[in-house]
Amino acid sequence: MTSDANAPTGSGLLTVTKTGGLAGVLQERSVALADLPADERRAWLAALRDRDLLDLDGAEAWPDSFCYGITCTGPLVDVQVPEHAMPPLLLELVDRLLGGP
Image (cartoon, rainbow, N blue to C red):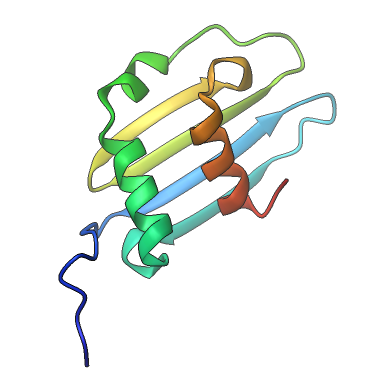
């Protein structure tokens, strides 16, 4: 078994939800950070550790817009962010995790 000394650490459970829109569809995916490819895990850890993410929590949602929930058990994060307040890089990470475009 080989170990990459440059691999990012992160052992939390990450859960991402997408709700809302005209149809009120719910998408959800949970994944252990340790199970993500190293590059994806590194990107998620950087986003989850960014204190600005917490400032997005509770931003006012627009009618019929999507809202994203991002929770993680380590690093500890629990935020709800409307789509219009999502930074583009975070929205890209969420879309990839949910299997979107």
